[in-house]
Length: 249
Image (cartoon, rainbow, N blue to C red; front, side, top):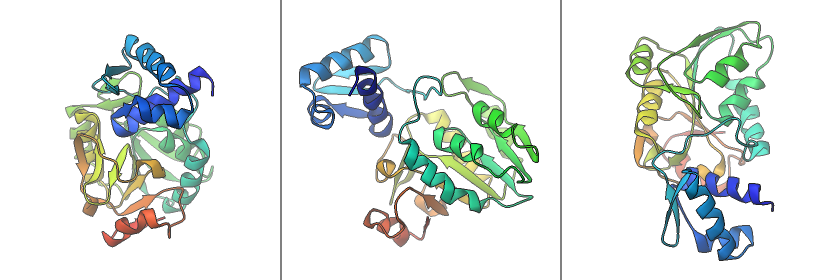
């Protein structure tokens, strides 16, 4: 694995789990702990993570940058998107936030789909503009520059005036008893407002996000209607979600 690939992998792990251990990374990446320590130092020196004894933690909030790297787990996300697209029907009002899975979703929407999309994510809005029959409403506010999503009270107030048919939440962490959680408090607040403004809440989550936790709650599992992963719906890792009454695709 090239150095750049290692650094991206480390950032992905910290985004998913909020912290990493040098010993675990050494095994996962099949390199020495000295190599991992040098990688962590480089990421720490550029402010992307916070190096601690034995590993590293998130440097408060690490936003996703769409232009920094290739999409992580791209094939898995395409599999998720193909399952999710049939949930969207003509003439629906759809809410969708940021994240690479959501971006892949709007890229692959049928060209003849007629619907109205509300989003707080600039790349998603830009991609939707390529669909001739989709009306796009961008929900503006303070923009997280790397992630290119808007957050804050203006966004939440705008969402309170919407009652969408369905929403698609980009998901950093989801747990079968705790629900969806986020690493950033303001983003969690916006995601919660999105969920509360939709009749049907869909979580798009690759399997390594299952049963993980972040510090800030978005919504409880009882508020999630559907989870879409790349796994077979009968996979044992999804059993607890089914028991909670969530539809699994």
